[in-house]
Length: 170
Image (tube, rainbow, N blue to C red):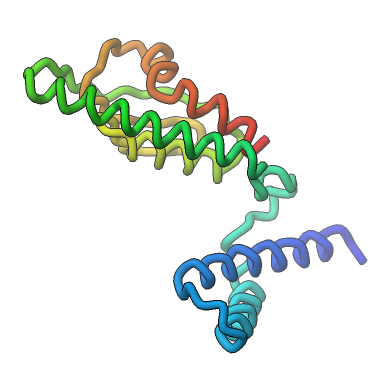
């Protein structure tokens, strides 16, 4: 067996697992018939579309599978940041002391999944919206900008998100 064939089989298996997890999430059923249908359809879809889900050049296992314990810490961090930012944004809007800016900065995350997660987390946090994500470059609308310098703005906005995501997807 060639390495490209092994990688294609691995991509099919991983795509099947991801699709089946989505099936379980959306159906919420653990009936044997539902599980068999979900596994079968996930496998069939994975056979035909695995090239769309996982690129040829994403051969590193760690970029595809997160470290679950760090992912749980990340979820707790996101909930905390959303909670704190909601009060900060509400007070800034109520008192009229906000300074909206569009800031550009780079992320040092290597995985496409990790970049998508940080962009979603920034958007989820009140007061910030990710406008564009291209490769390692983020464009963010920041409601209460304290600086327009790209590196400092990036450190403030993505700070602890990026540090923890580096541990989730190495």
